[in-house]
Length: 265
Ligand code: FPP
Image 1 (tube, rainbow, N blue to C red):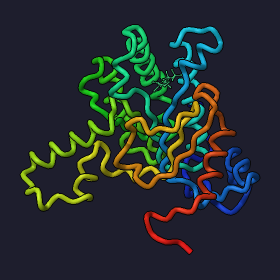
Image 2: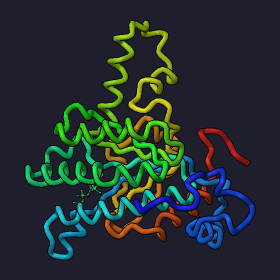
Image 3: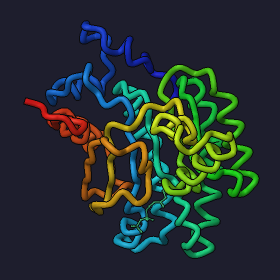
C-alpha cells in the first residue's frame, strides 16, 4: 500500500462535503454509487493469474507476482472507498496439489509481501487477519503473518483477511470439532454457535463476493458465511482487476434486491 491517505475511515469519508471524499469515492459518486450503502464485507476469489501469464508467454509465477501488485491496489481502493472488511483467497487447502515449484514460489511471495507491506499497512490503519489452517504453512510465512496480526490488532481501518491454506469445508470441520470438544450436547447446537467457532467469528458475513477470470464457482470459499452474499463475476483475470471493476462490482451489488429468503415487494 502507499503511505497514509487523508482518510481511511468510512464514517469520516461519508461526510456530506464533496471536498472530504477520497478520489475513488468521487468516482463512485459520479457512477451513481451510494456511499452509504456500500458492501460492508467484500470477499475476492483472485482467479486467472496462471491464464494471464500463459497468454503473455510468461511463467505462472509471474502471474502471481502481478496478482500481488493488483492486490495492493485493490486493498487501497477498497479502503479508500470505505469498505470495512476485505477478505481474499490467497491459497486454498486444495492448492497444495499444484506443482511443487509453484507452491514454493507462492508461499515465498506471500511471505515477502507480508513482511514488505506491514509497515505501510500499519500506517494506513489496516487490521490484518488470516483465515485457514496456518499451522501447516511454512514457518517463515506463519511467523510473518502472526507478527502482522499482532502489530495491527488495534487498528481501526479496513480489516484485511488473507485466506491461506483455507477451505470452507475444513473450516466447518474445525468448527464442529471445537463445538464437540467444548462438551455442548448435540441438541443445543445452533447456527449462531457454528458462526462463533469459525476462524474469524467477529467478522460480518461477506455481502459481496467477487470472482475474476469468469468461472461461476465458489471453490470452497467462505461457504458458510456466503450463504446470502451477492456474487459478481468478471471475465477480467485478477492481474488486470482495477478500480473500474471494483466500482462495477459495487454498482451491481447496489442494484440487487437482497431478500434473505423473504418476499420483498
Ligand atoms: C488463482 O489463479 C490464484 C491463486 C491460487 C493465488 C492468488 C495469489 C496471489 C494473487 C498472489 C499474491 C498474494 C498475496 C497474498 C501477496 P490461478 O493460478 O488459479 O489462475 P489460473 O486459473 O488462470 O491458472
